[in-house]
Image (tube, rainbow, N blue to C red; front, top):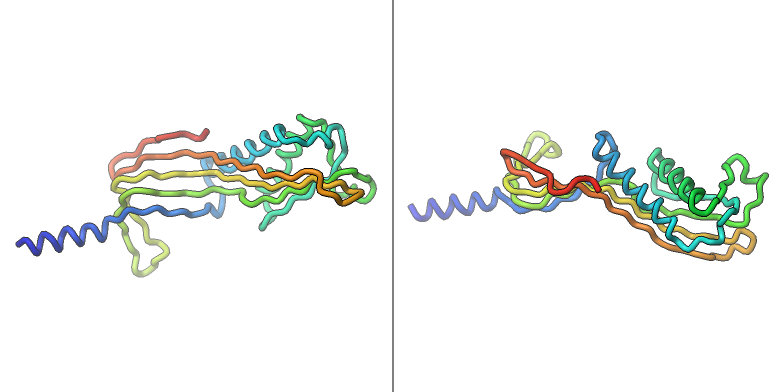
Length: 194
């Protein structure tokens, strides 16, 4: 009888696992994901106001941005940063179709390293494995914390266009999160999007 109890407990421990997973959101389908990524981009834009970029005060500059993919999120980040620089420094920007007609003294290059969301889960979960379609496997949270993060990171370089000299460089990062405590019966928020 003792052997059966030991085997049962070991089987239970194998199937109830503590896990921490991370997955990146592929699309911003829901409002929470959209808010997480845009709030983190907004934070980076606001942080640009604190950067030592006095050279671009009341200047017309060229903005070049780079990311591993080109999509609406990158367009939003560029527009939000341009708006903040205009508010803070009075900076104007040359439109892409005017690059050859309007000479600019400075170029601001943005290298985005992250514009997205992550989902982490930590705690005890019971895995439910779909042998027919393993990618559809899931788990039931026994006692877990689900964490949703919007993460934006950007390296910038300010270049004197005439001399091709790097004048300033920096890195800006922002993480916006919302967390939930989850059980099979109920869940409640630990923190809201902030």
